Image (tube, rainbow, N blue to C red; front, side):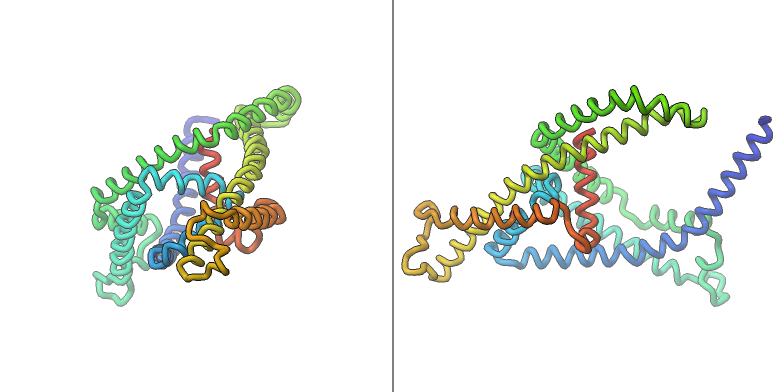
Length: 321
């Protein structure tokens, strides 16, 4: 292929990409504008509800989640616990600042969508192509957003995230080591028996991708095996911890309400074994519940909790790589 033909082909690809960008620009902006306020409002409502709950209710709810769902999102729950000591309050404040800036952009975007500077009765955004629309919206974001506030918020979140990753790397060091060991074990026979065959069947221009893709596949399989083992361990330990939290919360509430059941429930949990007995029963129920679900969230809850699923797999991949 001559140089002029290559240039023409390159320009044609750029044109096709521009056309595709124009076709998705307006629907994408409309979707973000629609969904962002709902996400922000729902998050704020949930957080306000959480803050309004009594301390005992929050403690019991935390124990319930750990007991019955701790093995399904082990790294996510561990990250939340690590963030508690690494600056969770800082992250909450930073997210609040980012949410405020997003609201400003959404409000300005709604005003911009109604502008009709030429006075022809049709909004200006409906009279321009996708490329011009993207430039217009990008300019709106750059001129209306507070860059210092956004930068400070992102830096705060980044510092806490690095601290959390360091904690999780140490906490799950054994799982990471197991995953890497399994990956190396799988890679040797794959490189010896599968890679040569794929190299022969792959077009010349794509041969260099074969070892990379096979490495990703081996790593994914190794991560699945290692993290499934860790999930079982996490489910068991979190069920015990969550069961104990719930049992002692129930005991504390009973004492506050004066329900001592003829003196069977003392004021201090150190003076009885009832909390341990109840915690074992709750832990057994929690672990069995997770085991029956295959340590995975069932449908349709997995769809409703897809952000948790995404966060869980992202954290696993990040600390294992």
